Image (tube, rainbow, N blue to C red):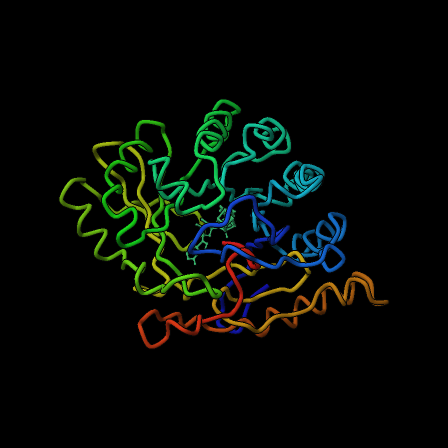
Length: 330
Ligand code: SAM
Ligand code: SF4
């Protein structure tokens, strides 16, 4: 699949639920209305759409959400998608998780073929953790990370950099990740969905963070690539990698290789744009797999050049896109 700007689409991210056991302040408001269950694709339907993308050349799948591991029966989906790894049709099956359910599922994920995963963690301070996640349990996440490592899963930590919240903790997070053999990626806050509070109060350009980190750490540009938007640096002191995802201060759309499926079967060709394709309607319609393939081709043919996220005081009232991050997944 090649889009109108010559980019090959080889990566599909699937949000399997919009629900979550946390209420991170930058992601959701405290009182969220979730989708009625009837609107959500069944696990079989998610698998059918994923299979269509694999047929069309997708080599990497990431399961996300909401919190993917709170979806009932989710291991069935991992097991069925894992078969494409065994057949050689897929290079990687991975997930992004808040870590709360990892102690329960780490071994099963490994058995399904998952080898790497991203865990989102913004602070090492249990009180701050409670504050930012509202409903999270720090101990449970720590136990989850431990269990995942024990199961043989390689972890990358994702940290949203927030002014006045965790900006004094970046060194400690890098040190901690280094000690545990985990890479870390810092992410800028993106203006997605209405939240309680102003985004410009939180927004911290990662160019500033990088400058600050250069005072403590020797960060050399890394040749490591994951096919993602992260710019990696090798950290001489820890031996680990430090990545930066900068959707606002530096646009990375030129190399975008991905599209995103929501749990209701809407395909978004860009995280920061509203255009989408309703694959649920096609899947449940009379056209079968051929119609699904045609609908996917048409959608890829409309993939936009890029997003135009901006955060400033003028735009604070209106998020760049009305969808919350839990709809399309991070
Ligand atoms: N629940 C899982 C988790 O937290 O890892 C997966 C879904 S979550 C939406 C995926 C990622 O998006 C997380 O790393 C989270 O920190 C990030 N995220 C959520 N809202 C964001 C926002 N407005 N700006 C930047 N990153 C955001
Ligand atoms: Fe849930 Fe992840 Fe959003 Fe936090 S960032 S509320 S863990 S979906």
